[in-house]
Amino acid sequence: MRLAVVGDTLMDIDLHGHASRLCPDAPAPIVEVSRRLERAGGAGLVAAMLAEDGHDVDLITALSNDQAAARLRALLSGVRVSAGALGGPTPVKMRLIADGQRVARIDEGCGQKPFPLVDETMLERIRGADAIVVADYGRRLAEAPTLRAMIESVARHVPVVWDPHPQGARPVSRAAAVTPNLPELLAFSGRAVNGLGAVATAGGRLRERWNADSVVVTLAERGALICGPEADTHIAAPAAGLRIEDSCGAGDRFAASLAVALAAGHGLEKAVEAAISSAVEFLGGGGVSSLEGSQAPLPPAASGDSSQALPAGEGEPEESVAFALGRRVQSTGGRVVAAGGCFDLLHAGHLRLLEAARGLGDCLIVCLNSDESIRRLKGDSRPLMSQADRADLLLGLSCVDAVEVFSEDTPEQLLKELRPDVWVKGADYDAEQLPETALLRGWGGDVVTVPLEPGRSTTGLASAIAGLG
Image 1 (tube, rainbow, N blue to C red):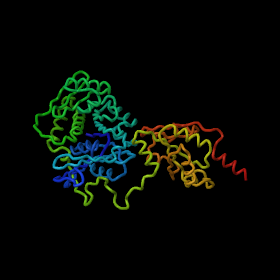
Image 2: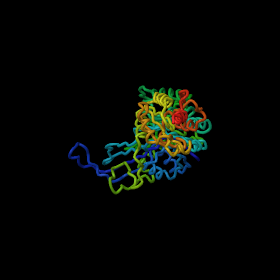
Image 3: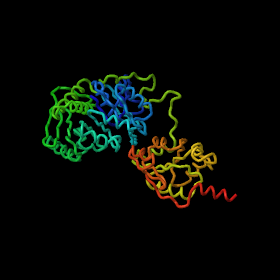
Image 4: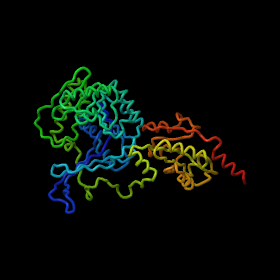
């Protein structure tokens, strides 16, 4: 059976230790860490569970090019990973646990939510699946239009189990089962859900709103409630008598097992029974800490440091002003606008285009052709001004917030890394014919053309200046 897991992947780290004293300068426990557990979280956890069960698994996700992503790929060695570029740091969540008691959770890279890039390989993996689990952790991958269209198309033929997130995307139509837990149901419905009757009413409304085949609300030790088109059915959990100290991963285990049972041809009620039993067995066996291959020795130094510094000589270059600005604006919900070109002799036409571009968002980043790029495009007589001078002049305009120089003939590679929300070109271009259009739409961006200022061009200006001599 070939299963596709779609969603946001995170690095989860548990640091276990012993605390017997307080810091001398603050009322905080000193935790002597003795054990470190690393595992793929989010959609990665679902994929790892299914692979450990012996299934053929594709993980469709987004990862950055950093140490956490490299470690995740190693942990997911039994899974085919098709990952679009994340455009930001791979999220890391670290739990500090002292004597079985959770003391703190430390998050890195979790506040940023850049729109991930979706490519054709990711879509092909979805197309060939026997069942799909969407593990939406609210980090925007499930918002990608091309990804959603493919899942909705496949949902007509194979079961799609959608594990939603209150800050995530709306489930696609015709999902076989959407599986919120009780707190999530409360967040989605915005009203009290005390008692099974209220749960059934809220779940039924969500099923209609999402146009889902069913909504299956998980109720922890009380099992699950199926909200279907004709009837609501409560499936009780086995009376296992377990004392659950850590329920982390139970929802992922439930969604994974439900998808497998539905793909095997079981009816919804039988599939939910099997998923509940699987989740109970998972928790009874130790939960996420029992996953094979999840334990790693403590590093020789700075064991509590989750920054995972790269080895000497392998560090990434310092982030440029343009990239730092773009990430900061997008992390607060703002729109990043980019415009590109040679800008060799600034003129009124350039100014009008850049002013119009700046009005389309919260910052404007100019993608500037390098000197070498211009020589290849326009001949040895150009540029008329060096890239340093051109950048300085652009930064002198109040409408330009940052400049990033690229050396390729086109800005496509830079745009893939920068991930602007809007790309601006002059109206002498047809937006539908631009290669950047498909690129921007891959992460939900827009391409906008603005009218040109008549009679203004660098070539014309250069010719006029040459005539003066």
